[in-house]
Image (tube, rainbow, N blue to C red; front, side, top):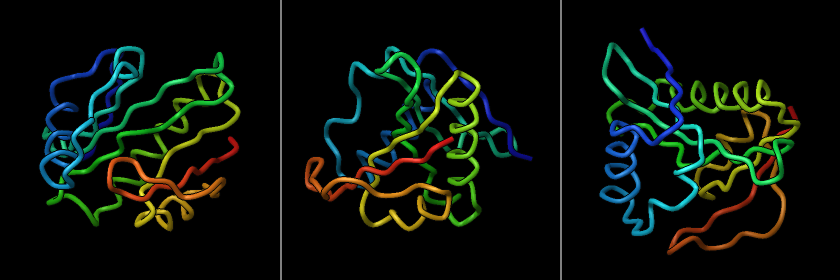
Length: 139
């Protein structure tokens, strides 16, 4: 059984998942930043084990929320946990007054976000070495 928990500080489980997925697996160097200090963090637990994470923050007073650092441990992918995480984050943003959610998607997974109601905007750009595209969803 899956359980989602929200935290107001970066919990160790989320940090470990992000290090594993983004730094060790994908090679990103700049994983942690000042946004972690004011973000809402989600951890998804499967049978008591932390297997996925994401963060949520706003910079415009709460009308638009940024979803980011969405990650699921490799051995748990393909179980629709990413969709569960994104949907939970959008619901959390809506409960906080958001009208829209935005994210910066790695281009290789943009189709996944499209299935969850996100649309692309802007031009592709590189974050470190990896192509990304901005996406948004009206709530």
